[in-house]
Image (tube, rainbow, N blue to C red):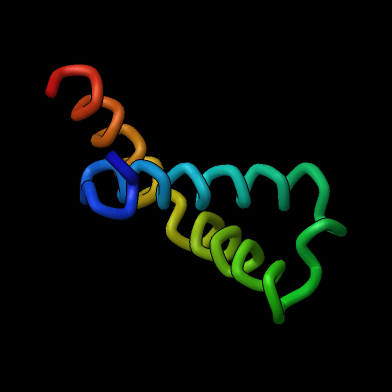
Length: 70
């Protein structure tokens, strides 16, 4: 089933995008300098990961537990 129609899979994809964008921005800051357009979406995801990192980490942990046990 597509991740768009399954809410649990959709949350996993969103968390992975946020975590990946944050990691890329920390390693290669010049890649996510644009704040508009298509790359602006990834800049915003990286900004969410930077500012809400404890909540994103808790979400990743919870989704990992959910994926393993349920």
